[in-house]
Image 1 (cartoon, rainbow, N blue to C red):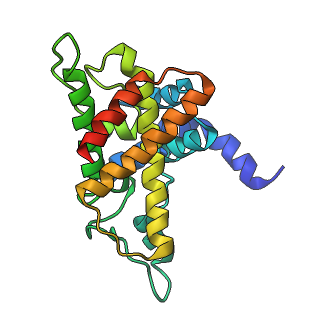
Image 2: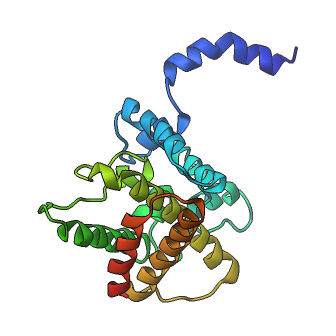
Image 3: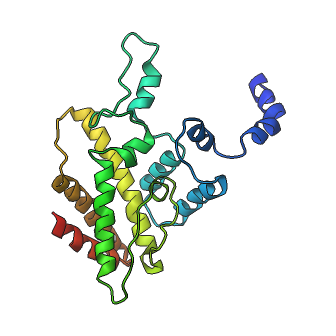
Length: 227
C-alpha cells in the first residue's frame, strides 16, 4: 500500500468532519462568494440528475457546481509564479473573472443575458389567463440549480433545462473569445440572438425526441420580438 493512500485512510474521518460537503462550497465561502445553506446547495446536484439534458450539458453543470470551469482567475493562479503571469480580469468588463462573474455577473454579457431571459419569461407569464406576478432569476437559480420561486410547475423542467443550456453556451462563448481574439461588441440585440440560438437548438432536439416544448416555443416567440 502506498503511504499516500494509507495517510488518506487514517485521516479521512478527520477531514470529513472539517469539510462535510464539496470543497467548492467551502472555498466559495472562504472567498466571500454567496452560497445557500449546505443542504440546499447539495440539492443542486440532485436537480441536475433529474433533468433530461445531454451528457455534455450535465458535465458542464457539474463543473460549475464544483467550481472547475476555466476562467482568467484560474489562469492567473496557474501562471502567477511564471515569468509572464496571465491576467485575472474579464476581457469584456475588466472585473475579476471567476465562475460567478463569467456566468452571472459580467455587466457586458452574462448579466444582460439573464435579464433578457427573465424579461421574456415574465412577458409570457403575463399573457396567461390568470395574472402572474412574475419571477426573478437569482444567482442561486443559475449557479446552484435551485428552483425558481413562483415559477408554475408546468414550466419547471423546460425552463431549468434552458438554464443549463444557457450556462453551457456562456462557457462556449468565452472559449470562442479567447481562441479567436476577436473584438466583438455585445449589445442587447446580439445577446438576444445568442439566446435565440440556444432556444432553437433545444426546441429542435425536443421535437426530435417527442418531448414537450410548448413553453420553449412561446419563449422563442417573445424573444424574437426583442430581436
